[in-house]
Image 1 (cartoon, helix red, strand yellow):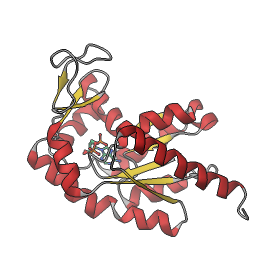
Image 2 (tube, protein in one colour):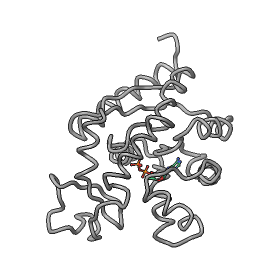
Image 3 (cartoon, protein in one colour):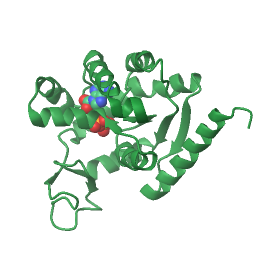
Image 4 (cartoon, protein in one colour):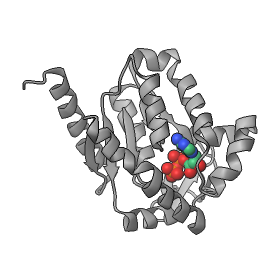
Length: 220
Ligand code: ADP
């Protein structure tokens, strides 16, 4: 499965929940890149500056990372939830080739309007160790220390007003066209991302299961 949606729509939160529900790995290209930046690898050095400014990492690099990850046993045996990829038509084309023997079941478009995500992004805070999400409205219990792992809870380097604007503009230009791209290929499931995290999860599971049942018995 692939999850599409604007920055701040709740893709990360929902993908973690869906990956537990369906017992499949959650593959977030943003998390993979941030881990590379923390570890100071070649990839991290190349990607870090681009990410902090809100730019995209070039397609060839991203396609290589995802192809490698989708070749590992856990995904070939169980399936997966891809979060943050594809983000351009070039990446979607490449993914179609990578998965030609095991095509995607569904592509979920988690829809939240731009004015709502702008507010969410401005108040978002994340654990620098385990990536758990918080916000100014829902902070950790004790100071800015993660409830799950004790890590430091900070603002992401790309959650500055300039980088947020750049990322949302890039989303409209490069990623939003994928909604029609997957609808044309009859893969798309739309999910309203407003409401509590629990409500959205329930809504998504219902829509995904309905879609998969239809796929399993097309006449019903
Ligand atoms: P967001 O969706 O909020 O931008 P992510 O954690 O998904 O957050 O991604 C953070 C950054 O990582 C992106 O702004 C971009 O620089 C880079 N990135 C992640 N996935 C991709 C991708 N598929 N193609 C290009 N760049 C990517």
